[in-house]
Amino acid sequence: MMTDFRQAAAALLAEHVEGLSEAEILALMETPPERNMGDYAFPCFRLAKSMRKAPNLIAAELAEKLSGGALFPRIEAKAAYVNFFLSQECLMQEVLAAVLREGEAFGRSELGKGKKVIVEYSSPNIAKPFHIGHIRTTLIGNALYKIYDHLGYETIRINHLGDYGTQFGKMIVAYRLWGCEEDVKREPIKTLLGYYTKFHEEAEEHPELEDQARAAFTALEHGAEEETALWNWFREESLKEFRRVYDILRIDFDSYAGESFYSDKMQRVLDELSAKGLLEESQGAQIVDLSEYKMPPALITKSDGSTLYITRDIAAAIYRKEHYDFDKCIYVVGTQQNLHFQQWIKILELLGYGWAQDCVHVGFGMVALEEGTMSTRHGRVVFLEDVLNRAVEKTREVILEKGVNTDNVDVTCRQVGIGAVIFNELSNSRLKDYVFSWDKVLNFDGETGPYVQYTHARAGSVLRNAGDAAGRALAAERWDCSYLRDDSAVELGWLLYRFPAVIVEAAEKYEPSLLARHVVDLAQSFNRFYHNEHILVENEAEKEAKLALTAAAKQAIRNGLTLLGMEVPERM
Ligand code: ARG
Image (tube, rainbow, N blue to C red; front, side, top):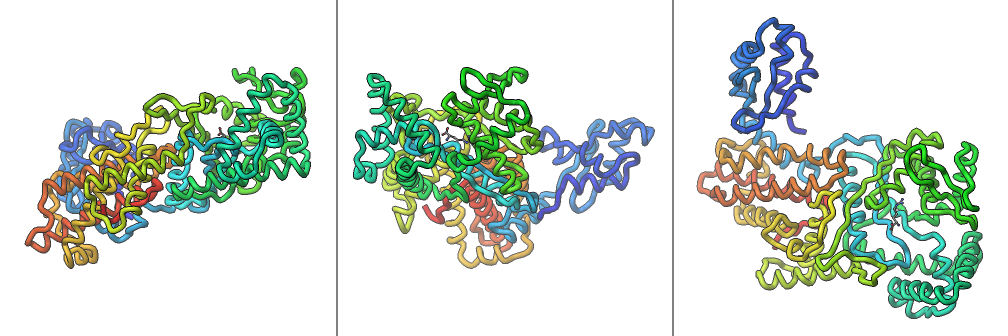
């Protein structure tokens, strides 16, 4: 753990100030608008009363008294503010020691100790394409899981598969009419999707198909053998495809309890709703009226008695609370479902579940491809797996053209190609819509995954070229930081110092992009340092200090990318 410099400044003030506690002082501390005005600033207005003096005078006296310490050699008054200038050498010393000592654990904390967080993400629908639209929930969810884990929380990753609902009645009927086992086995999702589409076409002329589908779903809900076996098979075959994508992305789950898992937990929801007097009949269906809360009614059961998406989500939340006793349950689902989640949380509240406030819907905007928005309905589906494979192939072209330095081209192409897609996704703030563009994703010079990975590899190559000196730099406990005075070095020092706090902020705001942006800042700052300064100089002390900073930048970039779910090649 590094010294909290802001707190150190507050502690210093607390010794000389009357009428304010250290905690109050800390809360008043500000960051000056410009670096040349100091690193921390304390406004003296609140002291005027207790110290019976004008704020400007108090500031001047405090600056006079406090100046000259090791941590803050320079403390100056400016109007009513006391400005603290942190010793750059202390900053560097602290940061280098922390990063190099903690290594992979740099940025870890115990913040979440004893607390349990569920992260629900990805959740594609079986027998439906796992398409580019799912990229956001999948990658944001995975990054949030890693970030919370790094902060010491106990985490549970849930894939709430869309594996239930009346559409499976249609699928069963379609398969019985036109299905071919071999085709499904070879290409499950595309084949099943074909049956589904055909069902809709045929049903326009033969409406009795719809009745058959309803009957098949009811049979499934009652556990009929044949229907259940078919549905299970569709689910297994779909999962095989999904798992291929998860393997490429190196993503895993602790539970695949999807919608079907709650089918036997629905009656309880209905009972609780009616016990609270919340259920109303409406044209044979059962609804919860939410007009009082300015929302349309929530449809709980259809007129044929079958339950709906929201009913299953209510059951899922109750089950998760009782089974896991979470402190927080995060749902990474697109903002198109805002209304669904608003209705759902309101119903949990109305049921008297105080923990509803620990459930968080983490929304995100849409992703469009350059050619236009993708849509299942118009048959222009873009499969996520195809995008990932294409990223690897395109990376191969770039790498062969650039002549990148690697022992294993296949592995590097995978690490860089997939990393590029992941970084592109996570560097966009989640609520904004964005357009997926290959030029942006794979640009080695932009603020991209390849750029950051390349910077990391560059730092690695500097360390390798340094030979024994690198080992000495890493093993040292102190470095002569008077050699790290270039603006680029100081800036890098501050970015490293802030790294742990950025991880916390990314968790609090459910925003991995904050971390991604910070990693870009680190990379840019290291590249400035690399260009401005000669690292492998004659002078041993100077060389070791510069190598230590290089190693620290490399480590922090690595930790950041790992938290985002990326691989970090040593060479490229
Ligand atoms: N399967 C749904 C879809 O693809 C997402 C499920 C989101 N999670 C939830 N608990 N409702 O739209």
